[in-house]
Amino acid sequence: MNQSLTSFAYLIAAVLFILALRGLSHPTTSRRGNRFGIIGMTIAVAATFLHGGMDWGWVLIILLGIAIGGTIGLIVAQKIKMTALPQLVAAFHSLVGLAAVFVAASALTAPQSFGIGTPHHIHVESLIEMSIGLAVGAITFTGSLIAFAKLQALMKGTPITFSGQHRLNGGLGILVVLLIIAFVVSGGSPVLFSLIAVLALALGFLLIIPIGGADMPVVISMLNSYSGWAASGIGFTIGNLALIITGALVGSSGAILSYIMCKGMNRSIINVIAGGFGNTADAGAAAGGASGDKAVKHGSADDAAFIMKNASKVIIVPGYGMAVAQAQHALREMADMLKEEGVEVKYAIHPVAGRMPGHMNVLLAEASVPYDEVFELEQINNEFATADVVYVIGANDVTNPAAKTNAASPIYGMPILEVDKAKTVLFVKRSMASGYAGVENELFFKDNTMMLFGDAKKMTEEIVQALGH
Amino acid sequence: MTPADLAAQAADLAHQASILAQNAAGVAAVAAQHVPPAAPFIYLFSIFVLAVFVGYYVVWSVTPALHSPLMAVTNAISSVIIVGAMLATGLHGSIVAHVLGFLAVVLVSVNIFGGFAVTNRMLSMFKKK
Image (cartoon, rainbow over the protein chains, first blue to last red):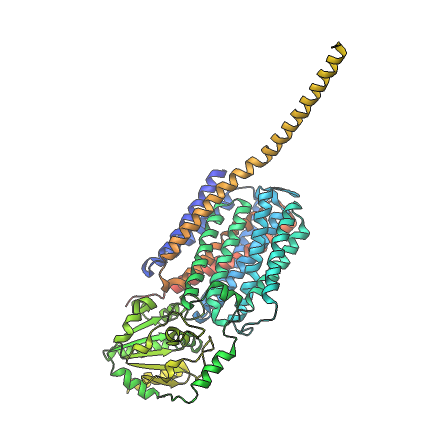
C-alpha cells in the first residue's frame, strides 16, 4: 500500500472516531457511534499491517499480542461491576500512558522504523515531540495508578499533604522541562531520556496523592485529557494523522469534562489540583458545635412509605452513597411500586454525583431505570417546588442550602439541587456525619426534613416491603 | 600597478569569492536541512489545532447522561496509539523497540477491546420507558 493510501486510511479512521463521539449526543444513536469507533480502529490497524515492510513472523507476533491483550480486555469489560467503573477507567488510562512511554522509547532506539532519522541523528522536531509524549505519558501512567488505588480503596481516599508539596511539584515540573530542553540539545541522549521518564513518573504520583476521593471525577477527566495529549505527542513524533486527530479529540474531551466537573462544584481546576479539600476539620467542627442542640426529626421506613404513597410527585436524588450500598436495584423497585400507586417519579442528578462524570446515570440505567425519567440539574431544579417528596439517597453536599445562603461555607456558590423547596424531604443516611466538604448540612434540621437513618439499600428495601402491605 | 600587484589582488578577490561561496553553501545546507521537516510540522500542527476545535464542539454536544460512556470510548480510541506500537514491533529497528513495542501492543489491546466492550455494555443499558 503506498504512503498516501495509508494516510487516507488513517484519515478515515479519525473521521469514524469523530462520528463515534458524535453518536453520544443521544442514547438512541450512541450504539451506532460505538460501532463506528470499532470500524475506525480496525481500519487503522489494518492500514498499519498493509503499509508493508513487516515480515510475516512479526505480523503473527503482533496479532498474538492483540489476542492476549484483547482477551484480557474483553473479560474485564464483561466482569466489571458498574459501581467499579471509575477505577476501571482509571486503570485503562494508565495503560495508554504506559504505552506512550514505550512507544516513545522505541522511537528513540529505532527512529528509522518511524522515518524520523537514524539512531543518534533524529530530527530535532521529533526529539521535542517524543520527549513531550514521554513526559505526559509517564505522568498519566502513575497519576492514573494512584487514582485507581484511591477509587479501589487500596489506599485511603483522604488527601495526603505535606509542607512544601506544591513547591516540590513545581520544582519537579520545571526540572522536567529543563531536561527536555537538554535532551533535545544533546541530540537524543538515552540517559536524559530515562531521567525525564523517572521524574515524570514521580510527578504523576505526587500530583494525585493530595487530591481527595470525591474530587476523583475531576482527576479522572483530567487524566483522560492527559492520555489524549500523550497520544497526540506520539502522533507528532511518528507523523501519524489518526493519532494526532484522535489525541486532540480525547484531549479536548477530557478537558471539557474537567471543566464541567469543576463548575459543578464551583471550584477552579487549580483549587482541585492543589488538593487537600475537605481536610480541614475546623469547618465541620465549628458548624457542628453551633448546631449541636438543634433537633432532628427522624422516621422509619413505614413513615417514609406512607408519605410517598400519598404523594403525587416524588423526586429521587441519588449520590455516591447509593453506589457504595448497591441500592440502585432496590431503588428502582421502590419507584415501580410508587408508579403503580399513581405517583409520578423522577430522578435528579447533580453533575458531580458519583466518582466519575455520568456515573449515576449508568447505575440507574443498569437498574433498568428508563433514561427519560432521569434529569440533569438545570432541567429539574425548578420542579422541586412542585414535588411532594424528595428522596435523597447517598447524596449530601449537593443538596446543602448553605451553598446559596452561607457565604462563609466552603461550598458557597456551588450549584445545588434545591430539594429544600419540596414539601417533604426524606434523607437516607447512615449517621449525622458531614459530607466530603466537611460541612454540616442544615437541611437535616429543617421542619420539612425527615431523616431515615440506616444503610441506603436496607432502608430502601424496607420501604419496598412497607409499600407492599 | 605592476602585473604582480594585479595578480595578488586577483588572488585576494578569488579567495574572498571562495569564502563567500563556502558560506553560501553552508547556509544552503542549513536551509536544506531545515525546510523539509519544518513544512510537515506546520501541516500536522494545523490538523491538530483544527481537531481540537472539532473535539470541542463534538464533546459539548454529548448529553451529560452519557458522560461515562464518553470517557470509556475516548479511552478506547486513544488506544489508536497501537499504530506506533505495531511499527515499533514489526519493523527491524532494534531489540528494545521489538520488546517495548510488543508490550505496548498488549497493553493498548486491553484498552481497545475492553474500552469498546464496556462502552457497549453501558450503552445497551440505556433504555426508554
